[in-house]
Image (tube, rainbow, N blue to C red; front, side, top):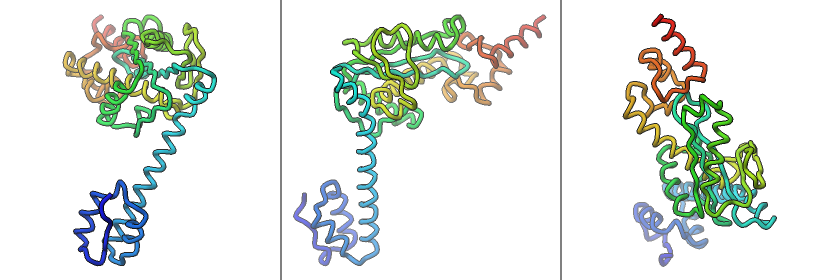
Length: 271
């Protein structure tokens, strides 16, 4: 850290400038010196500093908790612990995408969370961090055709199996968000709200979400009239209005009720 602070010989602006350079490693002595300064501006600086320390501590505790299930599996003797999650079960259009991720033991990634709780910018940033840190990443994509043929649950299972199969090395156990996947012959642990409680599942959630969103942006270029770049295929008012106006396109899920109903209306109108 710097040489320390003498509040009596410094203006408020000088202290602010010094603080910005020093707050990451503020010593107890400097903290006490600032806390003793009666000026309101300095007290506000101290208040913000204490709030940042509290936020930092909460994030450290949250990240520690997000490693609980991974540590549990490590204690069982597993080295390669996978997390898997899916995105896209609910939309009226586009594929269902799953991702599986193996992270090194005791990995901590600040701000990682369920992808739905993050902004698109934060997801994109964390996607790159995960790619950099992961031992292995697998992605499984199942098309609209298979969704309509199999049903969305079976298509989701298929995408999960594809994602896990791509991992190298293969995981010795798998953490999942709530469900277990048939056809995967390793130990599985379904965790309620797992994408908020397990760093491995959260990482998979982000990879799946970013992958699918990028696909929907490409689809939007082919079918701009539906607004896929905005709603990513979910049944928003914008999407439903576009469906009624423009009809069903090849990447709509014809087995899903709103799409099926509009398709039936179109066919009835043709006759």
